[in-house]
Image (cartoon, rainbow, N blue to C red):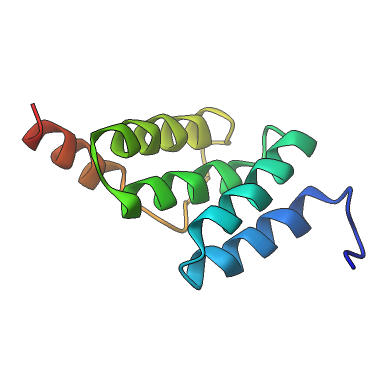
Length: 97
């Protein structure tokens, strides 16, 4: 049972716990639900970026970069992401060229 099904932060937090446990597919479902409720939830975009970074491969790295950019775009200037791997994604993509 989920006590706050319309509370975006709850979905992000649950997704973060699953992410941390390495349950990436399940985490993505929760993060997508969070973003369906609030598309400006920067942490959820950032968490999705981290998952794609960890999954690796060119397609996932491209997704990671897009998600990190979206997290930045919907954030205020003081946003400090929990996962800071955007530069690592850029390096990994450059190596694949």
